[in-house]
Length: 83
Image (cartoon, rainbow, N blue to C red; front, side):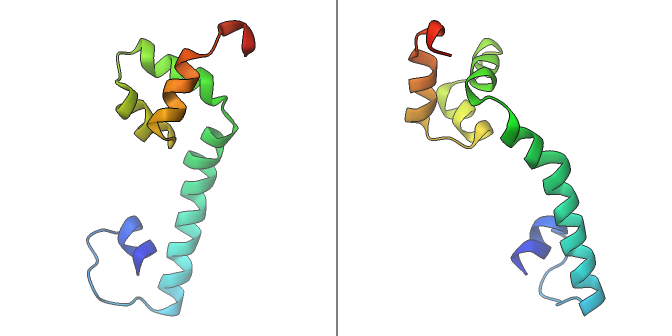
């Protein structure tokens, strides 16, 4: 049901049929393949630096790149010659 609520927030407590469950899993897989997987391949330092240039705070960057704020701060403080 948790996956169902993420994909279809309008659905409350009604469990879908087996066919409906499979459709939800396929949709979740497509979302992962199109949205999440490409972000996993990105260099986190480049993404963090780009977000900082856009004016995001450390906390906002951490939320967007799924890192802890301390890790974001470490990446921002790294010597540019280290990357």
